[in-house]
Length: 558
Image 1 (cartoon, rainbow, N blue to C red):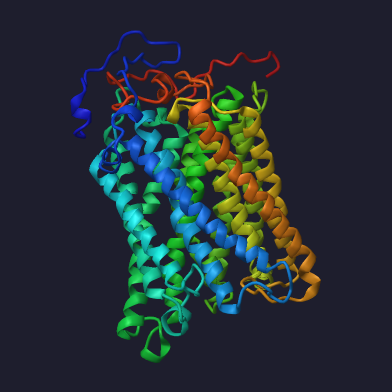
Image 2 (cartoon, rainbow, N blue to C red):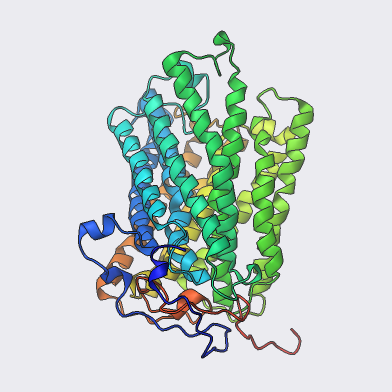
């Protein structure tokens, strides 16, 4: 039990059960936002909600830094002859974009913000299992981020976000060791967060909160935490080996010193392909919540959707070799990895079909969170189907290391995960700050993000199929039209990403007060005031019903 939890009365209040199976909870006066107004009160807090806000501010800042780097790349690609950046400058721009977006936004964006804020509320706990460790993980994250910013100021790094050897260990001229150190450090933040979530879900569930009553958001974060704890150490050790070879000349990846450059790819992708699911699984959990809320129905096939999250986490560890089809590995190994890459699509498909079935004959409301969820589903399906294309050995040989791959992983990692991030932000914003926002602006933002993203990255599928390599900024003139379309879409996407921060910040001062349940949905987090009290619940809640009990009236022919 946490120190904060010990402050409250732990006797369950089993009276006054409402029709959703959730006990009414007496709440404290004053929200977590009023628990202290000094900078010290925020920087030394152990409240999971405040730490979530710290993460939200941090990842948003990194999101814009990575976005600026992407803007330089897209402007440079407007013309075939690279009129803006030098060769080295271009390499450093797309490397900075990749490093910041992957490790300082996409991986922590949903788990470290909304996972931190919501998991204790969803399971009826006062805080995470280790509140101080939670704060330490944020400081570790910020240390890694500040080192990355220093790398930018000191000249950057030019290896690409993958740090492939022998380029990173022998030939690169940038600050490779510092950049690897930044990612090395931030890996410990991920490990601590994953460990905290696992222990919290196991030990701090309120009475009646069985595994079969957990929200799918919690299931997805639980599966994500398993990946964080098991896979991230492999990345940290791998980056440490790069630094050791580069600084001390130890032969690990350099053939001249008795090393094996392909060993690095195996180690890196053993982490980095599961890392795709670190980005996607929390997004899937968010979308499950948004779909159920929009349809006012229980999620169809709840047990299958929950089990699919665990299946994705397990199978995700077995498919790293599909990144190495052209790297010289055995054709028999490639065939096995191809099959496993197709297999991981099965639990992903289960989720899409179950979301569709949930929406069928539902009382759907076209609120901004639902529109973001629909955007996620569309982009996720395109990204998943093109992933099946890349899992085919013959096709992958043709499109490997082309813009086809760039478009594919952006549809999954950026289009899907960022859409879910904004969906979560719009859905739980009234709960986090106690104010509502202008719904019309939310709908416009969701539409423009979807349109801008497709205009940016769909032409890249065509570019890749026609043979345009990734990471080239000088290209044949016949590709210019597609590059111009992509850059135009990136401009629209940038404006669409900025828009929510304008009206959400406006709502903090001028928005209407939000009640405990502004969306009229189920869940323990909606039984407390908006914003929640410091310790969440005055009494430990008791859960007696299913996680999505909407009591939908069905048609006779349903």
